[in-house]
Length: 144
Image 1 (spheres, one colour):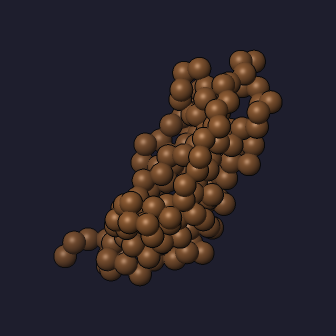
Image 2: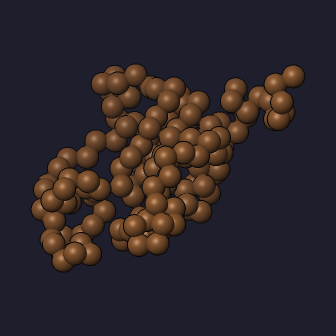
């Protein structure tokens, strides 16, 4: 696990020799990873109906180890990046495609985080819901 000095954005993605933009090397820690599926199967947690992931570019890896979430969850909220801030970090199009392949589609987009360099959206949260689930039961615009 790469731990930045400010502890923000710490992630398992950066390599040991990764140098942050300001030139500061981050602290590396060895940590054990446990899949969400194993936690559910071993009854350490109940299968949730809602999941929120903010894992700094490790979203697809977590979801691959959490395939049971696609059965139990009605909504999955992911922090999505529009740029490759870290090596191997999936970006917006890849996340949309990955989720759509699992029959989840965007329902809402919020928490826009602008990139300091130019003010463009760098990250946001996207709430994905089951394509044929209760949140998409109606495609009407008005409540009437």
